[in-house]
Image (cartoon, rainbow, N blue to C red; front, top):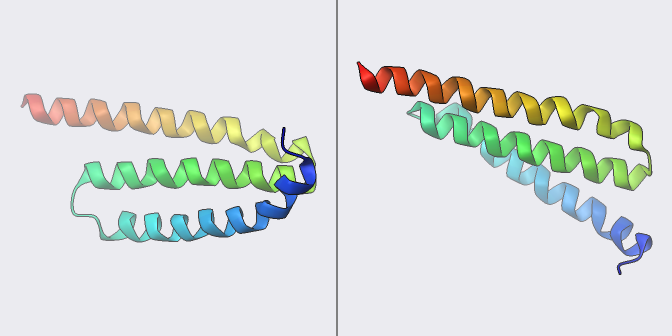
Length: 93
């Protein structure tokens, strides 16, 4: 099992990598030509934000920062449902 000190020593590095990935996904959201690519980039951006929030909660050793993870996960699920219904209706016309 990995000790908490090892996890805490790698947390800032992982947070930096996830932040870099979030910047790349944000660029993809703003430069995308179609809706599918935009939704996929927003999905990846939200998942990275969830992981970043979990890393910050681990670093500060507080469970209170994890409260925002559940609404974010449900928001991204609802976004996928809404966009898939929209694309399905557009395809059937």
